[in-house]
Length: 276
Image 1 (tube, rainbow, N blue to C red):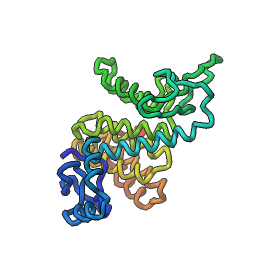
Image 2 (cartoon, rainbow, N blue to C red):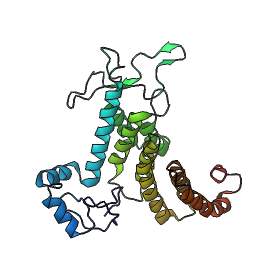
Image 3 (cartoon, rainbow, N blue to C red):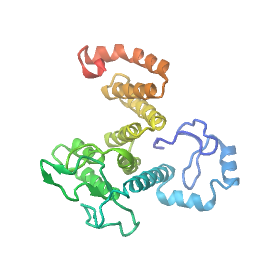
Image 4 (cartoon, rainbow, N blue to C red):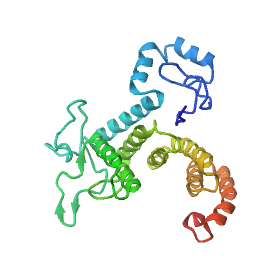
């Protein structure tokens, strides 16, 4: 079973291992048979919902879809009063996505008046079009520097090169994870997506969610690369940052004290991560 970020029972929210029981149809996970039965009997997990989750590709993807849709709706709502009349998406050139009716967002990067040249509609788009653009870039395995290029358009604008922010950044994070969650845990692209999602959540005030995902990502890295792998040590630093933002300073300090000797030994006194 491929691990994911849903690490609590769908019924009682207790922490559960990846080997925990799950619904045979949609793969929603529970801490035991009693919770699974109760969830079904109370109607929280009825036959119709089970079918929807299965059609979506399982509990992980269904969850990612929901979170993505939520972020897109909030981004469109926040931008609705500021999108110029008659504006269209610079990618598909439509005002609304025909299939879903999705509206436009703007101001999610640094597009606008660049170098004294009016960029017109460059900074106006559908989030779904930005997602499709990123998916195509990731699939282009002939790219000269594949790993860097495949990740860049999930978190940065193709036109101005600046990072996305706000609800668009959060939606792109969920889309990035959704596009790669079914890959092997050993795949770099999957771990990159998980780390990217955590970063997008942390940058938008969702530190508890970010912390949970960063812990999962750290466990993957430790398992496959060891505690002294540079990416594992970097992820430990990210965990400490999330802990500090959540005012869990004792745990953050303890983690940093634990990490400092191996980081110094492996990377050296002057390395950026050591200094951080």
